[in-house]
Amino acid sequence: QVQLIESGGGSVQAGGSLRLSCAASGRTFSIRTMGWFRQAPGKEREFVASISWSGGRTNYADSMKGRFTISRDNAKNTVYLQMQSLKPEDTAVYYCAADFGGTPYWGQGTQVTVSS
Image (cartoon, rainbow, N blue to C red; front, side, top):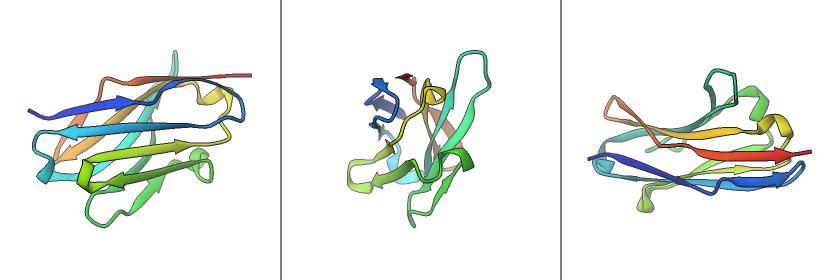
């Protein structure tokens, strides 16, 4: 059974930093890509960043470039999202996502709240 367990969300003041983690379990040998999406209240879920599992190629949404960094630890089957210079508009539920051999899976989400 595939599972994605997120951690690291919380509340922070504007300008602060947070690091999210997402640990995958199950058919981890079949992971192709892992990434992060977010959904703010009243808005659609949006792409944040992704990383390929074998080559480590990264991709970011334009609004996150320079502030967010995605990385992975293949040995731990874990992907991280380091978020810096956080803004109130970054407030959202952040979801981990993974492509397991062509099948997408989602984590349960972790709340990030940035106060001004």
